[in-house]
Image (cartoon, rainbow, N blue to C red; front, side):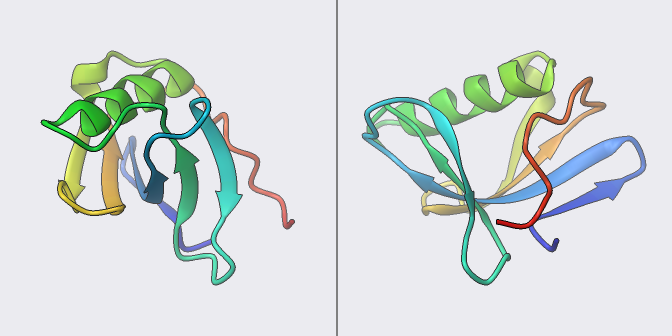
Length: 96
């Protein structure tokens, strides 16, 4: 899968974010497998979407929100994230 990779103890994820969703949720990999789709309730306004994404990912991976960094795509739907030393891997990795 090319939507995630390990860099030492840090995990880097490539995600496609859908803002204003009914609930925060992991959706599944994009058809090409390059990004993992994530649904976030917050709107993409004034950084609210990015902050909600960081909190959602931090909670899912068992880390503090300060350990989730947006590496690229801060103002786009496609983002690269770094999670420092995650304690869990909540995303199913098997094929759909």
